[in-house]
Image (tube, rainbow, N blue to C red):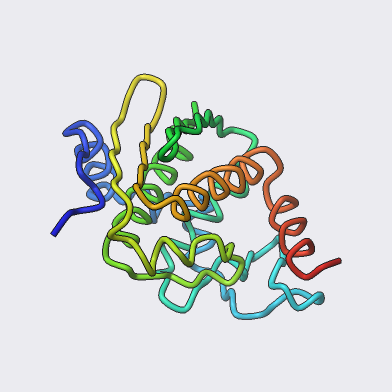
Length: 198
């Protein structure tokens, strides 16, 4: 069976392992991660979308762990501290994402590795605000080949496919993630409104 993750550098695994062993991703006292893991996030906002900026309930999912939701919250709360470079390839994408804030970078690294592992297993977390662009990734995960590496520039991800539909989805999702890095939760609101036809 072809694995989605075809290469993860030893440095990347070591970084994630150290963060998990020290609890840096989940229990920093007073951190957004610790606060999110402890918050009740079951109530949706007044608009029904779950976009309460205090507790961010829309970041929960049917199969998402509290830690995964907390990582997303860290990235949304600190989106202005994240930089991202995307190159569209004829058969996929190459992205480099980073943050100078080690706390944000730990959450970002864990999220990227965790989500790629989920796609490899076909385990959709069904995050409430998740883009439907991701559906094809979980349904046809065998059609994607992914390489991950930690570089001096940040976490580099190269995803390729021989399936033109998958390539189009990779390009679109890369745009969506970049929009969230640029504008945070406002970008999510805009995408949801567009999908609703408003």
